[in-house]
Amino acid sequence: MQYFISNQCTIIENNDSYTFFNWENGQEVHILKNLVHLVSDEQISFEQNFEEKNIEYLLINHFISETYSKDVISERLLKLIDSQKENTKITLMPSGYKCNFRCKYCYESHDAKKEYEEKELNYFVNYIKSLKGNVIIDFFGGEPLINFKWVKNLIINLKEAQHLNTIRYSMSTNGYLLNKERIAFLVNAGVRTYQITVDGLEDIHNELRPLTNGKGSWSKIIENLKLFKGLTEYFKVIIRINFNSDSLNKDKLLKLLDILSFARGDIRFKFIFREIGDYSGINSSLLKFKINEENYVQSRNNEFLKNFEFINVLIDNGFFSEDIDVLTRPAGLVCYASFPQNFVVNDQGEILRCTVAVDQNYNKFGKINFSDNSSKPEIDNKKFSDWEKNLRWEEKCYKCKMLYQCLGMNCPVKNIANNKSTCPPVVNYTDEVLKLVLKQKMLIKDILSKRVKQGV
Ligand code: SF4
Ligand code: SF4
Image (cartoon, rainbow, N blue to C red; front, side, top):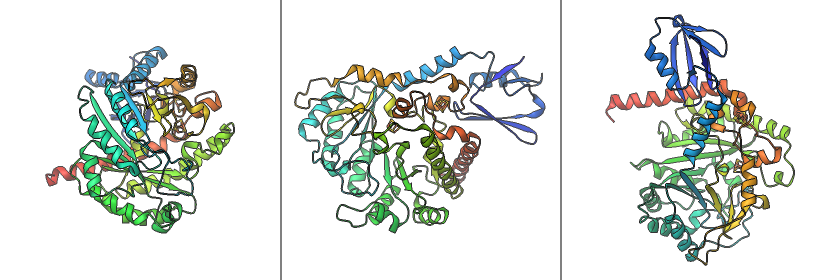
């Protein structure tokens, strides 16, 4: 019998076997060549001695199918979207846009002085307790730790919300205001995911990310990152390195990794690289214009190639890439702003969906009246549903390796600007990226097997 090979499979030909890698679920199988007839790029049949149970395995795990049906694929995609809807993600800005840093490339204005206060606390405690399912609360800013007291109070008050399946917390912080006590409190209380930026070596970082008084912030951040290392709990610290052609190259990265050697082989530390001034392809000045897709794609491709080079260095030296993880995670490339149950609340109580286009009117969907605890957020439903209209997979997507990661929903802002689903650059490099995915998998396997041998 002939079977259809999933469009999301990459097949690598080895000497005596084929490796089938399924992007849909990150699974990998090796099949001896003498058991396989590759009938075409799209179809496959097997020798008689290829066991039935192996065919079953390939079918169940969507490597192959008996028929090719877009309806079946769409159904699976809709299920994936539905599963994401069980999570409500609320991005809170405890300190509003206030920040203790003045990063050279920041797209936020720090003029606003407002922080969340008691009425905001009462409102959110009440509101979050009224939700069902899983809730993810992300502390964002500005710098959220400027208002650590508020963060702490919210977490303490939400401990009673036992009816929720889970409450998970994450935080984007510059890391400067962390200390041993704060880290212990936060990690114990369930703030398990952090994004902390280190823009390269000390001089470069200090130039790019000075404190408001102009002094450097690098040493303190490195010191605080090391504090995580001593914890026995699970956490994830994503170390973000923003770079441009002057700030980072292979040698500089190797020196930095040497300094960050405590993160080597520790799966709780992951790295991402982002080109300065091109956050997700959009910065505030670009947003004033209609985004030119060609320029956008070119710039993202360049960023991606550099990223690719740095990730190679990273994994070769025993460190982990978050981007590589994301590429094998269902809906991993979907922006949080794509799901209706995810939203951001700024210092004015305005409800946003994108955390980059913070000043744009099209990104403002309603308001919260903090003074009335029991009031529901006022939502502009028309605007909300207009945003949704731009979130879709298209005909081209069925053939795409990244379909289950992207769903045509990688960046709603770009989809709106281009009036179609805009692809993330990774889609042009799946073969190269696959090598990195397999390399990172191998690294994890090696580390785990060493641990098993050492009985850790
Ligand atoms: S919609 Fe999402 S991916 Fe696009 S700019 Fe905003 S936050 Fe970034
Ligand atoms: S938008 Fe592009 S990357 Fe995303 S699923 Fe469609 S074809 Fe693939």
